[in-house]
Amino acid sequence: AQTVTQSQPEMSVQEAETVTLSCTYDTSESDYYLFWYKQPPSRQMILVIRQEAYKQQNATENRFSVNFQKAAKSFSLKISDSQLGDAAMYFCAYRNSGGSNYKLTFGKGTLLTVNP
Amino acid sequence: GAVVSQHPSRVICKSGTSVKIECRSLDFQATTMFWYRQFPKQSLMLMATSNEGSKATYEQGVEKDKFLINHASLTLSTLTVTSAHPEDSSFYICSARRLYNEQFFGPGTRLTVL
Image 1 (spheres, rainbow over the protein chains, first blue to last red):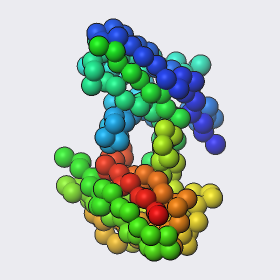
Image 2: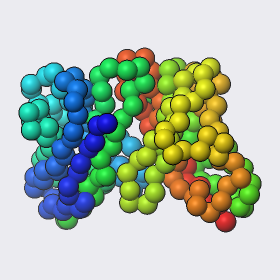
Image 3: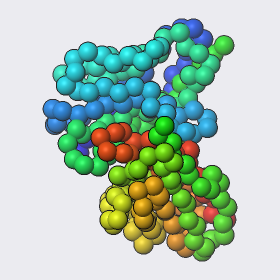
Image 4: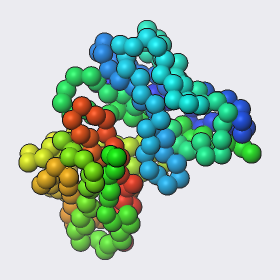
């Protein structure tokens, strides 16, 4: 079974600074997808960024980028120019590329605090 | 596009009663819907996966008779917590996906059982 590990229960960053959230995963599959989801205090899950394992290029979405190291099974999220609205719980998630149901496996999450 | 709603957003019920939570995909047809449970400051735990017109597939350890899931149409799935007890109090989140797309999450339902 696949597992996702987020080793940082909490992180903090100063507004406008950069922060990196860590995620490692374990799988025997060669093709899969990785995600970062944001859950603000409203508790609405929001997809931040998605990475296909077969793509070597790291995904980016505006201020959010990932460092995907397939051999090391590492998938970190970098948030640049942090804003107060970035404060949230961040979950790393994994999905196999095969199968018909698109089930996600989540890490335990990292609570990000942004200090003004 | 890709909006998922849940109703109710909050519900309080007495121990022993049943509670139904609805999950709707508002602007797309969902081939699959998922139900999660989330305890405070914890991650999402997948409870079951349901496909329209089929029986739900429950994750190991989830009581099928306690958590009844019905996926009657391509836009509606319901979770019924039967004979609820205080330990069933939690935050329940649904998600829906359309063909070849990822999951879109609903806003969640907070259940409190007194």
